[in-house]
Every structure is written in structure tokens, then in C-alpha cells.
Length: 384
Ligand code: B12
Ligand code: SF4
Ligand code: SF4
Image 1 (cartoon, rainbow, N blue to C red):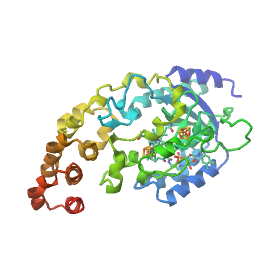
Image 2: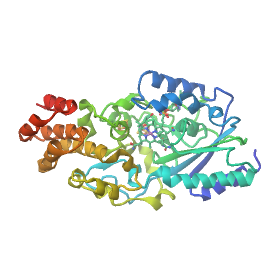
Image 3: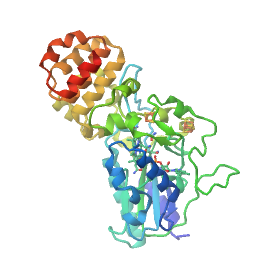
Image 4: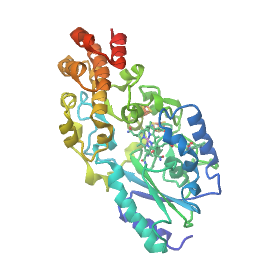
């Protein structure tokens, strides 16, 4: 045992990390089973257009390729549960991914990770170039390392689920050249599986698999990003496939459906670090207000949030899909205005769909005559 390991754990917890666990880096290939699973996922095209996943696949399972001489990965869990934060205050409100109701976690947590690095430097006499830290920002298969370290298990919903926090945990990784005694992975009593399997503590539950409205699970624990609302509303910068739009329902940005139904969330506790950057105002935004956003208002409301990266056109695209699913004809003037006069063809295309779903297609005859963009014209054709 590294003599200072427990001190280090306590000092990292004192920085606000809700759980701190150690995993040892085995000799290369470090995670052969997970690497095989990742390569199968990529070969099946489930990464959609996230080409960066392909480019960095080997690094994700082999810390030595990220930091030569890596001997341990310290996995940090950060709860973003907060009892008072409602991702959907009323059934008719647009629903946001819970993590989006905070300032961007990449920005919020990076200073805490930098402070964690300084603790390593101070305790072990290493320099700032001797370790790496990431929170969704680097080539690390975070859930696999977290499962290795016993931070939790990978559920059938593909999430790393903690016994102490449920699903609502961000994961961060510190890759170090230092040797620590690894924490044991979780075990199912009576099982001697060497690798903690997917759904280890799910039992016979299948709530998440059953609840996914777009059938995005190719298998338990395996998400096909092409069908996942999270991918479609955040990562995809282009057209959202028509067949998926109805399943998106009122999800305006990201999706937590397979997280929300998980019974392990009954253990969720308020996160300490994230609480400081909660944006209570966002969940109260009405669809009307979102459909009427101007560039200035967008910049003002979504400053410092992860939503700013989607840009106004992306958010309006999503708002049109939610409007089309709402059945609320009072939104027709707003979507007609977007369909007829918005500068972005992407927005016009989704607005045409929304108008047609709300039964107002006749109001677009003149706009259709003027339209020249092939993507929008295709929407008119298919919505007729
Ligand atoms: C790409 C990505 C996405 C994609 C693809 C999702 C996916 N399931 O892969 C999209 C855009 C769809 C997405 C959505 C979301 N994401 Co995301 N995403 C990532 C990212 C960048 C890479 C994930 C990845 O490598 N996927 C490839 C697949 C193959 O890997 P995997 O899902 O991790 O599965 C591995 C484990 O299951 C492991 N494994 C575990 N046990 C076992 C056992 C055996 C026997 C084997 C063989 C393998 C195995 O092997 C697999 C890899 O081979 C990570 C950050 C990171 N660097 O890891 C965040 C991350 C996974 N996302 C996160 C979050 C919060 C979300 C959303 C909830 C956001 C939202 N509300 O909209 C959704 C949840 C969707 C879901 N149910 O997974 C968090 C998850 C935190 C947690 N507690 O698990 C992460 C870790 C970011 C972070 N730092 O906090 N995401
Ligand atoms: S995040 Fe939503 S769409 Fe994606 S797998 Fe989970 S329930 Fe399905
Ligand atoms: S909802 Fe049920 S099956 Fe899905 S991850 Fe949670 S416990 Fe496992």
C-alpha cells in the first residue's frame, strides 16, 4: 500500500469530489475485453459521426498511450443530483438533461482537477507534466476504469451506477505514474467474475431498456448513438432523422429517460461542487420563449452552459421537434414564422415538420414556392 494513499483520498474528497477510487493499470493491452467491445461498437457504426471516438480508440483503453509509464488511474465521481433542481417542472415543459441545468461541467470541474493535480505534485514530488486529468475531455474509457476501481458498476442503461449516488455522477480521471493499491471492483455476492459484467447489480430489472423511446439499446449496456436522443439533440449538428423525431417527445437537449427510471437513484445525494453552479432558471423556460430566441437573447441566457455549444440554430432545431410533438396548436404562429423566414435551412426544415405535425401545413404554401434549399424542399415533400 502506498503509505499516503488514504491521505490522498481524503485530500481529494476535501476538494469536493464525491468519491475517489484507485485502479491499477495492467500491462498493455490494459482492458482487453472492453477494448474488444469498443472496437465492435465502432465497427457496427454506433458512434454515428463522432469520428474522434475512432481516432482515439486505442488510447481509451491503454493509459500508457496517453501517459507513457502510467501505473494508476484515479477515478473521481462527482454527483450532479440536486433535490431542488427539476429538469421538467411541468409535464408540458421542455425536458432538459439534468447535467445541462448547471454551468458547463467541463469548465466547473477543471479547476478542481487542476487542484487535485497540485495535491499529487505536493505529496509525491512529481511535476505537472507527469500526470493527466480529464473530465469527458480526453481519450479515457471512463466508465470501464470507474467499474475497475469499484466506483460503481455499468448498468444495463450503460451508465456507471454508484451504490452511493445512483446514476447522477460525472466521471473524471487522473492518470498517474504512481503505484497505488487498487480498490476492489464491486462484486455480485457468490460470483467470481474477473471483470465486473454489465448489469452486475441490475438483477432482473429491465426498466431502462423498456423505457427508451427510440430503441437505442442494441443490447444491455450498449447504446447505438445513431438512435440515442442524447446524440441526436446534442452531438448531431445536422438533420434529425424523421423516424426518430416522434420518440424525442419533449426532450429539448439530451436525454435522461434511461437514467430517471433506475431504482438505484434512490441513493442519490446532493453533489457538493456542482451545487455551486446550478442554473435554476433554465428549466422554467417555456417552449414559446425558446422558439422566439434571438442570437442576443440566446447568448445571454445560455452563457457558460453546455447548451451554448449547440448554438442557436441547434437549439431552435430541437425546439421545433419538441413543438411538433407537443400537440399544442398555440405554437403554430411561432413555428410558421421559423419555417417561412429563419435564415438557417436546418431550422426551416424542422419547422416545416413541426407545422405539418400541428396540422398547419396549408399556411406554408407561399413559403414553399420561394424555398430553394434542397433539404427544406425535401421536408415539404415528405410532410405533404
Ligand atoms: C461518446 C459518449 C456518449 C455518446 C455514446 C454513449 C455511449 N453509451 O457510448 C452519446 C452522445 C450518445 C452519449 C450520451 C450520454 N452520455 Co455520454 N459520453 C460519451 C463518452 C465521451 C465516451 C463513451 C464511450 O466510450 N462509448 C463507447 C462505448 C462502447 O463505451 P461505454 O458506453 O463506456 O461502454 C464500456 C463499458 O460498458 C465497458 N464495460 C463495463 N463493464 C464491462 C464488462 C464486460 C464484460 C465488457 C466486455 C465491457 C464492459 O466496456 C465498454 C467499452 O468497451 C463518455 C466520456 C468518456 N471519455 O468515457 C461520456 C459519458 C459516458 N457520458 C455521460 C453522460 C452523463 C451521458 C448522458 C447521460 C448525457 C445526457 N443526459 O444526454 C447520455 C447517456 C446515454 C447512455 N445511456 O449511455 C457520462 C456518464 C457518467 C456515468 N455515470 O456513467 C460520461 C462518462 C461523461 C462524464 N465524464 O461524466 N454519450
Ligand atoms: S439516453 Fe434516452 S435515447 Fe439514449 S439510450 Fe437512454 S433513454 Fe434511450
Ligand atoms: S433501470 Fe434497472 S436494469 Fe436499468 S440500469 Fe437501473 S437497475 Fe439496471
